[in-house]
Every structure is written in structure tokens, then in C-alpha cells.
Image (cartoon, rainbow, N blue to C red; front, top):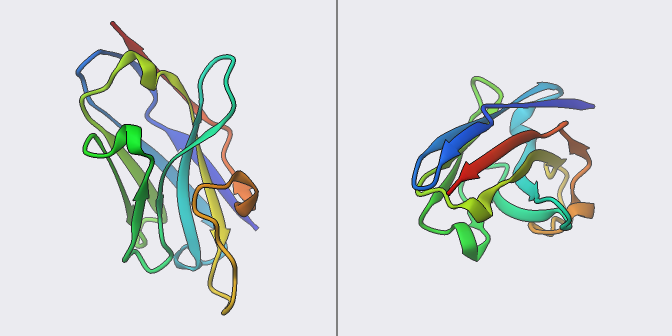
Length: 129
């Protein structure tokens, strides 16, 4: 089991920046691929960014490429989402997710919700125009 707790959300003006954090506790953090999803009001939850277990690969949805950066600090059991040039359409609840990919042969579909076994409670980001 792993527990995920997001923080860092808030209200920011369009064009501003914010960094979200996701602290993980429980089993070995380095065994997990980590991701951020978001859910805007009235919309389905969507993939934002992900980081492989090894840290060698990152993935982004097209709408945030060049603006958002996902990173992880295995020593602190934390994954971050640095968000720059924020837009009102980035307003959403942001969720951290994790899946253990340390077992050889584990299938991991980066952008698919069902691929992730553990979720945080979410943190609200509101971008004002």
C-alpha cells in the first residue's frame, strides 16, 4: 500500500506559476511510476503528466507541453508538478496517482486511469482570467 497526499493548490492569475507536490508514504517509492491527472468541473478526469519508475521517461498531454514539468525526488518520496504560464482552462482538481511497475512484465498505460492503483484526494487549482 502507498498513501498519496497532494498539496500546493490555490488561486493564481492567468500567466502565473504554481508547484504542486505529492508526498508518498508506505512502500518503496522508487518502485512506482507516478502521474498527475486533473478533473475540471463537469468534465471527466484527464491525464496531465507522468514519470516512469526509473525517472528516465516523462510524458505529457499536449495541452501542457512546454508549460508543465513533472519531477520526482526519491529521497523525499515526493513528486512535483511545476506549472507555468497557467491558463483559466487549467482550472481543475489535480490528483496524484501511482502504480507499482517494478515487477517485470507489468503493463502500464501512461494516460489511462485504470492503470493506476493508488490515488490522492486531490488539490484544487483555480486560474483566474
